[in-house]
Amino acid sequence: MAFLPPTFEARLARARALTPNVRELVFERVDGEPMAFEPGQWVSALFDGVKRSYSIASGPNGSPQFDVAVTRVPNGPASTRLHAIEPGEVVRFTGPQGFFTRTGPQSLAPALFIATGTGVTPMRSMLQATAARPAKVPIWLVLGVRREEDLLYADEFRALARQDPAVRFEPTLSQPRDGWTGRRGYVQSHVRALWAELAAAAGGEAGASLAPHAYVCGLERMVGSVRDLLRKEMGLPRQQVHSERYD
Image (cartoon, rainbow, N blue to C red; front, side):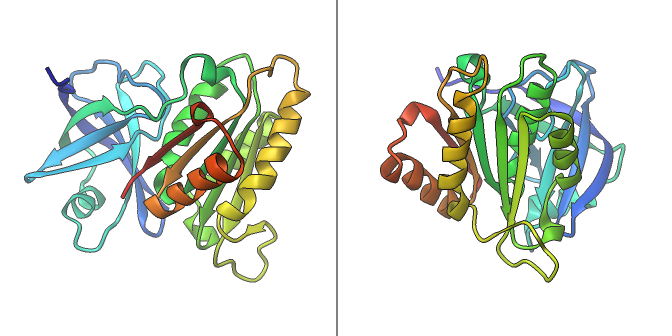
């Protein structure tokens, strides 16, 4: 028998613009039950005969609340609705679901997070869950977008990196404006060097004896390109490469 994820209702508690085209929505379960999920999982919003899935952008903390980040898609019925709803409105959801998670022994391994756009949202969930633990292992995030104003949660990631030396945030822009001093180009162009540096750093960390893992999330073209780089060109075992695409 196929597993059917539970259905529940959640009320919009608050919302904010993360970028010109992405809106963060903070929902709270109407039944008041804790929102139980594994970092990296997703939920599906149900309305008007439409079902759309969104990664949970917050870490599990025992509360009824959870965050999602929704990109406005021209003429997209789901994103148009979710960009228009106001606090207090209720949406039906199913979930959580998904296997793009960082749990068990691999949660203790160093990690390279590779994301584009809203593909960073499940990694934010993983980072928040990791930050709540006393044991620290290296976690490096490379996030690729077109322009600086398209970076999601950049201030939060920079603050986390300042607070925790095990965390690094490496944004890269494919269309940088004058004055940008960070990385340039697509994420693919930075993966090999960052992986080598992370593996070397992890080898010198006390308690970081596990091999690093890579987590890749974004559009199919990027995910496929990075998986080929990691698996075929760099020779990483399948068990160390985790991916999810959202198109």
